[in-house]
Length: 121
Image: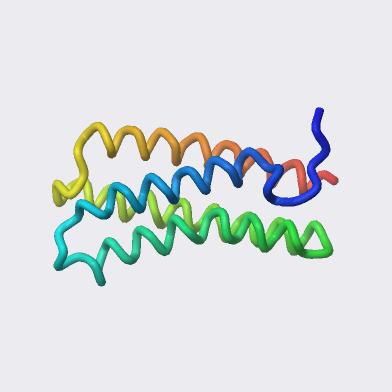
């Protein structure tokens, strides 16, 4: 098993970075009038997920780390809500929506697992 030295070694961080990349590509196709609306909100929520994982892992104590992981989990739920709204508005193809939602579910499970691990350390 590889030793985890930084956030860059965490699979959940890597998966979150991949999610951000796909979110940016997907939202590029959103209506231009949404650039300061839901497009911006979706992108900010997505970026917040790996950012908080990274920031938390750089903190000294497990309590602080856990807090940042919970913030990341909150951003994930926020992103999920915004994507459902975008899907209802037909800004996403059904294929893109299902793919992103599948990634969200996987990241959520990984984050919850990491939170449990850090809390029990």
